[in-house]
Each structure stands twice: as structure tokens, then as C-alpha cells.
Amino acid sequence: MATLVSFHAHPDDECIACGGVMRKAHEEGHRVVLVVATRGELGEVPDGFLDDGEELWQRRVVETRASADILGVDRIEFLGYTDSGMMGEPTNDAPGTFWTADVEEAAAKLAAILREENADVLTVYDDHGGYGHPDHIQVHRVGMRAAELAGTQKVYQATINRDRALAGQREFAERTGVEVPEMGPDFGTPESEITCMVDVTAYTGHKRKAMRAHASQISEQSFFLSMPDEAFIFAFGTEWFIRAGQGPGITETDLMA
Image 1 (cartoon, helix red, strand yellow):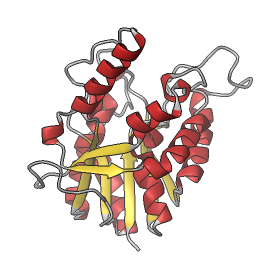
Image 2 (cartoon, helix red, strand yellow):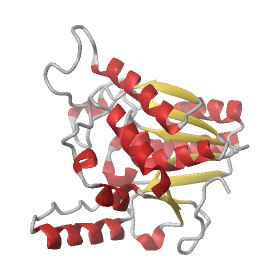
Image 3 (cartoon, helix red, strand yellow):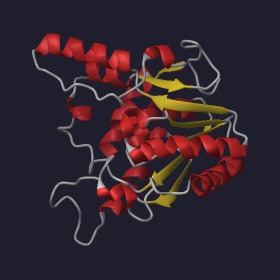
Image 4 (tube, one colour):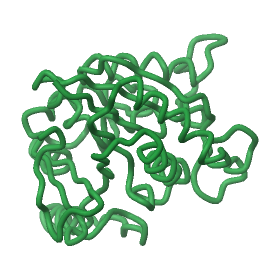
């Protein structure tokens, strides 16, 4: 048995980015640990969704625990920073946000967990946070440094296959005649730079159920839950990673091998 630690920025990121590899590791008998930097305080929520006196972060913690149960997580830890909001917003620089956190200090917190767990594998995000979100970028910085401090050798940077996403968009537009928004320059990574792809088709049901657990952020009408099963499997049935020193090209198909 090995231990997988999956490090994320906000509640719900875990099921979108790494839900498949987490559930796969659990099914194969490995220990799975989820670490979340913030409690997602700045997420948007419909009016009347929360109970009287309930704060959004409280609901998102409950949702994370429900999602974690679905994904087979054995331990959850929150690092205690606050949500920084989208890049360029005034909230980025507010005291206590993850974006303003001292990298060495935050990395020491994560490294302590890696040591406690004797972690074999750590997942973080790529160096631009998948799509440029400040907290996602900080996950990369903090996670990579924590791995150095703890001596965790196998670090996989979760990313988005930009080429596959573009192909999917084109096919969708051709089928439906509906134009799709252009991807920003920070969205995803070219497939030529990706070193690991994991087929998680068998666990897409778990991923979708875990997304539903985050009802404050992912509604039934959302992109994630409203698409047909075939489209969902295309979008979320493979999870993509970069591992420094591997490649060129895709050379791995299993984080826990």
C-alpha cells in the first residue's frame, strides 16, 4: 500500500482535477489524503441557498467531506488560508489569502503532512494553475517546495490537455452550431508537454457524484452536470499530469505504479 496526497486550492477542485486518480488509488488499496489550502470563502452562491447565519465556507467544508467520502479519501486537512478570488481582483492581496501566503511557511505546513503520511505521491497543479487562478498558481509553488522539504520524490502537476479540449470544442461547435468561448492563453498545456495520462473512465460516476456533493458551487444546470454522459466521459474520463524529468511525451499512465 502506498499513500497519495492530493493538494488543492478550494473545495470542489479535488473532484474536477483529480477525482479519478483519487478514487482509483482508493479502489487499489492505497491511502488517499486530501489537503485544501482554503475553504472557498469567495465562491458564488444563489440567494437563499445557505441557512440563516450559515457562512459559505461552513457549507463548503461540509460539501468537501461529502465529496471526499465518495472519492475514498482517508484524511482531509485544510491549511487555513482564505480564498484569494480571481486574478486581478482586489481580494488577491487581502491579509490571510493564500496568494499572499509566505511560500516557505505554507510549504512547511504541507511538508509536515507529507512527512506524517510518509507520502509516496503528491499531486499539485501546473505552474500557471491550469487557467491562471492565483490560488492554483500558489498550489504549484507551495506544493513543489513542500515536496522538496519532505523528500517526496513523485510529484505530478495536474493540468488540462489543451489540444484535446480544443478538439472537443470544435467537434461540439460542428455538431450543434453553438459557438464556444475562446480559451485564454493560460488555459491548459499542449499535449506535447504532458508526461502522464490516466484513464479514469471507470470512475467518472464517482467524479460526477462528488461534483454533485458541491451543490453550492456546481448546480444541476452547470456545465459539469448538464452534459450528456458521453461528453462527460470525453471531458473528465482522462486526467492529465506533468512530472518533471519524465518525457518527452506521455510515458506514464498510473500515478501509483
